[in-house]
Image 1 (spheres, each protein chain N blue to C red):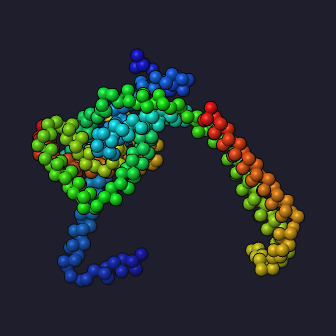
Image 2: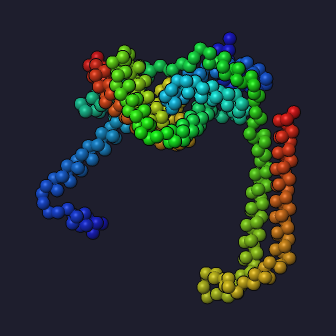
Length: 195
Length: 202
């Protein structure tokens, strides 16, 4: 029903009081937002809760969207700031936990990951697993560039950097992703190269 | 420049092993830089960000150079793999949950509506007047007739009569203007805050 409406049209109607129309924007961007958030949180439940908060924040500050950039770029800026706040809070919580416990958790993640290798059936799953092993910044830049269809300039607006810096960061992120794939999925990578 | 080179050479003991080690390190560094440069250029080419000239130069290199060809294939595969990933989806109830949460709120007024530019200009004017006042007064205190032999003005701050400065009527007027400006800004801020509080409680 709202498929043909542009983001700007929906926003202006929501601002005029048609609150229910905001659902169209949620449906349009929920997968992008959820994927980006998941790169930071790693846990689906946390990602879902945080994504929900992000849409509520976006709705509440919708009057601040002046249409100078794409709605998606504006929305991903909220995603990034919310994720950074989430990580900061999480870091504060984890520092109060015994360091050894934290180390064990990390080790378990690595070993669990190795066990998962056997179950990986598709190439997409392999890449997703490899992206999950990257640091959140690298994972987010790759997702923004490849999946969220953001240009270098737009990513620059989201992360607060110059397009050239984004370009370098993107190159490095892809390099690290390549290394992760070669390290953890050497068998699958070899298979792909032989295809 | 020559001295720097001499210092560098002096640091290396005169046995041949160190020389070869240094040479190997240099070779490795050069190779790494070349590799990095090649990958950067190839990524630009794959992303479609290379210019027309650069594009044809890279195409030529891929055709003729085996190393470039191999790296290009590798990077292209990585590019296609990343592209093939699918987005994650939240639960089926996600939109419903968001809409239920949103129903409790209203869109907040735009930030620009409550951050008034007049206030920002007022604050700027306050500081500009303060700085200008001090500058004008300080220059007024200088004895320009002295030091005529040199172009550099060197006021004797020790001889400055601070009591005279503080009792001066100009200073008093200047301070009064600043106090009035400050009070005006405070009044504007408090009125605005009161209005906002009234608006949210309605």
